[in-house]
Amino acid sequence: MSLIKIGNTYLVALFCMIFSSSLLAEQAIQPDPIYQETKIRNSRPMVDGEVFDAQEQDPNLASIFAEADRLAERKVGNVPRNIDFVHAFWGQKKKILKGNYGIKWHSPAELNPQINYGAYGQPLITELEERAILNYLMAIFDLSDHEIISIKRNFEGEVSIRTKTKNGNNHYSYIVEGADNSWRFLKLNEIAL
Image (cartoon, rainbow, N blue to C red; front, side):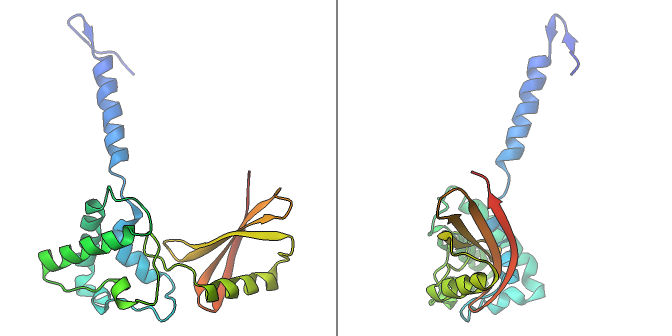
């Protein structure tokens, strides 16, 4: 960094202040992954007869849905990322689509009352899916020395099965994708403690 002298004053402090505030501003505007909700949701495996509003598949409306996702993401910026988050997001998206574009859109929760959705719109794992996943993994791996810690589907549709050995020394994450009774193994990660 060079020093700039104006009169008897060096502009180092001013430069540092401007540079650090621009970095903070850049970090502050990082979008939440929900800003691509329509695109990501439509790319993941659908579960339990899941359907989405057909308007989302219309190529003429793709940019409108993308814009509605971005605007809704900003509206829910301060909403806690808990089980109710996606419903707040879908509520804002619905208002934006109706108010700005005259589009009457139905959220996944409205169209799929049989499905419970997680914070980012991913279907929660059902008991039937949990059994199917565990049966699938036990056919591939010896899990007799493992305890299941959690089974969760992420935003993109991948499912992580967290386990630990019964002595507690080793933790693993088995990653699969699929839905209902159809699963495919992706990878195994050992989790450092």
